[in-house]
Image 1 (cartoon, rainbow, N blue to C red):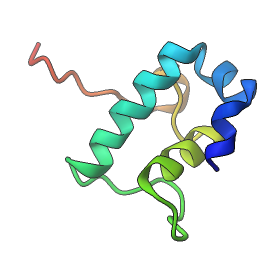
Image 2 (image 1 turned 120 degrees about the vertical axis):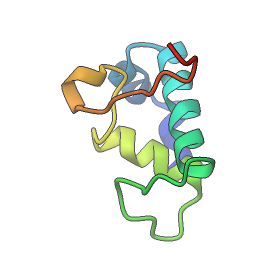
Image 3 (image 1 turned 180 degrees about the vertical axis):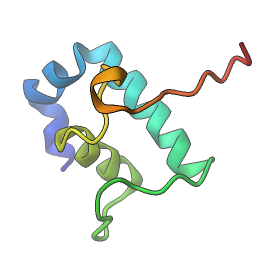
Length: 77
């Protein structure tokens, strides 16, 4: 699954490498720290692999309005 990071498909899905990195980082925090449930079957995958699968299956996107995924504002505003 990590191989998906080498392809341009996942970068295009997120609108660029910066957005991809931010999305992965934010979703990892939700899974690890906040205890959010994965949106795909874990099937023995690591947290990073789960996040990549969620992106590849369009469960989460950098265009948050399209998927219904809401990135929480951690800055308290």
